[in-house]
Length: 635
Image (cartoon, rainbow, N blue to C red; front, side, top):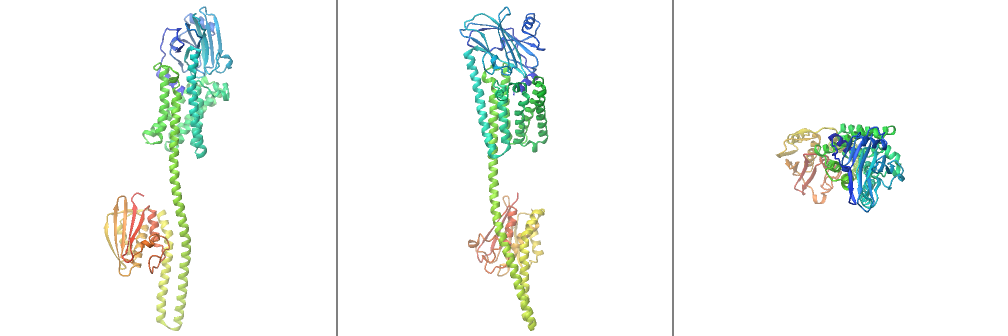
């Protein structure tokens, strides 16, 4: 994160506040950060020795700058800091250069005759034995207890990345107390991140969803990167100092790539914003290129341009998040955008601190911890919501699967029944036809013409019933084919019903009255509409002891089209056979003397179900039947 704010500083031109103060009179056990009492000088060629630096400084041949916090975006030169101090304390006073990423630190304690009294030569790559106190940052004793003399202090700094030198001064116990505050924040951050890591890796293992694997990788990488930038370089314990500090771009890319891939997966950018998807991959490709270049080129030569690429990449991710939230109204992007915003706010606070607008404290300096930790927590919550959403979708799919399995079970039963009835009915037709044909031949040989005519009529009825049986069975498959392969068209139900009656020669067979037509027109397959009413009309004619009559209503109720068909047939005992009426091959069970295949009402129900509709019947024996069909307008 630090490179982002360094580039921002470069762009907006924040300058350090100049002051002539360069002397400290230490009267408190903790002076805190004393940047305003420092002077620093730039050694562009990195060639000055201590003696030459003192010589040029005394001759006013060096340009001096002073500031609360020293920060530059170009790490190639080295920098010299100077100040003087005296103490009235009874305890030893120490100085802490609170930055672990300093590749070279040369610290000198001098008297006013410019004689070196103590010196230390250390750095992030040097052995820990070169440090006055073994910790991540650089501590130096400057004034002994009860020593009231004044001394000069000079230290030279060089770093591979951007240099930040918050100089903290106080007694050893107080600096330890300050260190413990920073350590607590670091350990709290690492612990919280490991909990989030464990949570997401658990989800990855048990859900096999790669987005949780990607995010787990990101969390690990951000632990390494954030702690490195906040003076707790835990990576060097695993890969050594050389790789940690000299090849920063070779490993720092992991967190960037992790968040980029996570954004792609979580927001489905490839499908929804293909151009931004390509842009992200281009930016991540450039980041990976820097990782490769760092193998051959020192990181300090890559630092400035690398930071610019990182800023552009983070900006792209943030723009995508807010675009999804504001313009695409994607609820998933809300938490993502909030997480990024909080992380950026942590960085803004850091920016205000280094600009002197907020007091430099351990808490404010480490606001990146809180920003990043909040981001990870919010992203984890977002992923948990995603898991709940997927769980709900899975439950819906399971319900659909359960219904499908139930339907398949019923279809299998129906198929078995279908095979039985086809073979049984066709066999019956063939046997009856054969027997009647033999009787025709017998009575024809005997010359009994009247008997031949009688049996011939029966033979005709048997063959007609056989043809009806075959047509009914064939209609089961033909309707499915119509619904799948033919397009719906706009039909006028009243007009279409009259055409069905005329086409099938039913004008004299049944008296039809259309009482109501509120629909006017609707979109439907004409063959499906015809199959529904042809079966209802046929049943009304077939199961009638007198003149067949029917009343039809086409209504609109709410968001449904409603067809109501009432006949004056013999009726149905719905209490006894209500569950069997629309089952296949149930002829003759609920209607005395019923003939036919038992397919008609089953076929009507299948058609209605295909339109996500419902069919029901109201009837009692001797009083006809009323069929009510509801078909949704939106289906």
